[in-house]
Amino acid sequence: LMAEKGGYKHFMLKEIFEQPRAVQDTITGRLLGEEGDVLLEEMKLSAAELKEVARVCIVACGTSWHSALVGKFMIEEHCRIPVEVDIASEFRYRKPVVDGKTLLLVISQSGETADTLAALREARNLGAKTAAICNVVDSSIAREAHGVLYTHAGPEIGVASTKAFVTQLVALYLFTIKFGRSIGRIDKAKGQSMIDSLVKVPGLLEKSLELNPEVEKVAKRYMNARDFLYLGRGNNYPIALEGALKLKEISYIHAEGYPAGEMKHGPIALIDEEMPVVILVPKNSTYEKVASNMEEVIARGGRVIAICSQDDVEIRAKAEEVLEVPSAGEDLTPILLSVPLQLLAYHVAVLKGTDVDQPRNLAKSVTVE
Ligand code: G6P
Image (cartoon, rainbow, N blue to C red; front, side, top):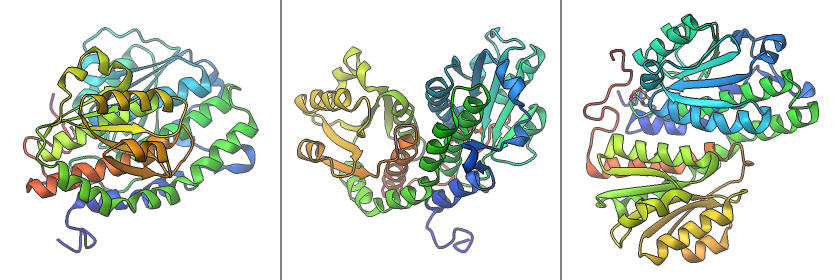
């Protein structure tokens, strides 16, 4: 079994460390660098069909729903087409507004989640074009959607999703380039620069993984907390949700993810000297806003674990704990921020002695409603 885990103590840790390779596999063979475009033929969406799309709906469950939320930012920012994101178990019973001008994307690691499959069938019946972002090749969802974009992350064994999540983000980024180029919202030069940023991600992920020993020390200091709050803004808000979910799933500590600007409308009441607050504060367009949210937490005695850009001396001077990730540009930063959050959940769980790869009450793939 140790051999299967490649020398790692758990599949989850192995899969976290596989992320640079997994992302490389998502990208390989798909870039048309000269053209500033990408090749996603299995999606079976021609430029003519993409020009017809008036609206995108992305539907998923769990961690895949978090990647969908990040996808909304990418697609709306670069393609200027409205994107709605929904949880599959909600979508399927909601009489959703979907028609032939809707592109329905479903995201599923396993390709077998019952609610996601039902949502896909419902959307097909309503006449939507459908495409699936899946990891498992030839899964039910991959087969039933009109087109598919495989993440090629390789088998994911740990119940808590890690490499499947980051490769979903990469897949959404590839789709954004394809969509934007097809409808004329992304020109060749911009496509080229988006690709240039993307090809750096595997190397930057390697750098983020070097945080592992530091994250382990942080985990030791906070493992006995009863609750955690995770805050982020914009496209990093879903990463706060995902960080909190990871911690809940495997360490059984209650954790909540929140948009940092919304903290004042509730969660701020929870902050005291006992409360660790993980704050995603990379140098980006909302940096100043998040930094001021961080000050609000510090003013109330909260214990701040800041995840920020490299060499951010201001954050270093103020936060109790600082984990620095390399810069990857605004669209791709969520990928790099995910790494310390995965490692934090992992180390807290190991220290607590839980069954990291097989947490209680959870299944890798939920094939019943
Ligand atoms: C289960 C797993 C999660 C996963 C979710 C959706 O709850 O434990 O890790 O995110 O299902 O799974 P899918 O295979 O559809 O992405």
